[in-house]
Image (cartoon, rainbow, N blue to C red; front, top):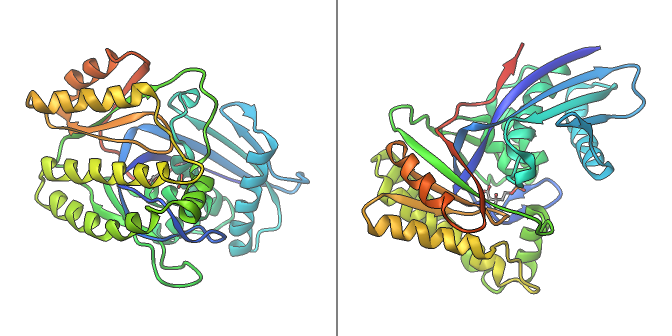
Length: 327
Ligand code: PMV
């Protein structure tokens, strides 16, 4: 039996990843740039064990459903191939944030799993290689290997060995926060990001324009980060999210993640800005609204968002570090 455990933080893309150049290898069509969040983490333990006759997955203390188990098992094959490991694994993964909220956890989960599974299989890999392995589980997970601002390079190689993230800036001197308005309650789970982006690429007349806009947004975001300019970073953050959602909404049939409280939160963020608070919104493959701001403004923004009808919870996070091994 050999075992290892690791923890990784979630990340929120400021310049979004939405579209693949190779769906099988999960290779992105364009780059992306994210902020790692300290308050949203996944801890995962992986144990390769001779006694198992198939991979086992426990999520938050309960056995996972078969599609999740099978997805993990296919991903573990990548680690097994790399390490010449023949044994099946027992995997125990838990989030320290409410999973029921529907907040994406695949980024923190596959980043933690990449570190834990490779170590349990006897491999010691540098972060760039871990990022490549994490990407095979979930594109956004490639960025969660790193803390601070991470940038994902789409790479050009057919095998994806250069499609990896790196730390753009640890930003330990820049007190930013992300305030997350959880929009919830009783709405059927919408289409997952993986299927949605493929559908968008295949059917949305706006998809090509979206992909073409990404390099410009990345350059603007890098400049803003280098200059510690929240207003400039915020403008590109909101624009990237809205362009991604515009392309998704124009898919046929539409991929529409927004609910009425989503739009109400966007309006609240504009109101805050009009009143002088630097606050900028982004949304992912779900109805929640995440607001980038100065840490000093977190309480004011959280109070404003909590007052929006349909917001069930508000979480606040500072900037997180990279994936790390646990004892
Ligand atoms: O990596 P995935 O399949 O979870 O896709 C992530 C897609 C978005 O969250 C919408 C954008 C992003 O860059 O994280």
